[in-house]
Length: 219
Image (cartoon, rainbow, N blue to C red; front, side, top):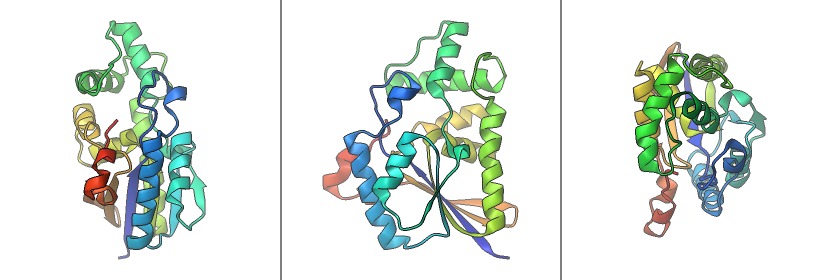
């Protein structure tokens, strides 16, 4: 049975001061540098892949440009992030729960939000919790059937949801997986038939050098 390899990469640091989807969706100067360093690492260590996929979001496309990998890029909106700001706005409207202003507040806010989303309690949202989980799983199923190595530039929520679904962790597990994911981090999965095994999580070898520690960012 042929081994398939799926490599998920979170985009570089985006606009950390944003309060809506549109303003968040661009890389910061640090995010651009993370992508360049990641590209150097991938070209030296990964060398090649059978397909390179990224979402249609600006931060995904800017990360791919910085990586500068030789393969042609396939744009697939199934790897796009959930619309967190829109979800948080609807959650605030229905529950009067303030939108978080710091990572510490986000850690408290996200599990409540994700559980409400999971239970179908948020009315005017872009997509359901189930749809968000399923659209990416559908892509992974297609890639496993193709075989080989797939490199996917995506977002922390997509990566966390995929792992949470893989291990049946539910919305609380989804939130806990999301909190520590570094910008430009690498997550690896090996696939045999229908079986998927996580063999790497949240790796940032391109940021290990002491002078690059400032770029080990979560938000």
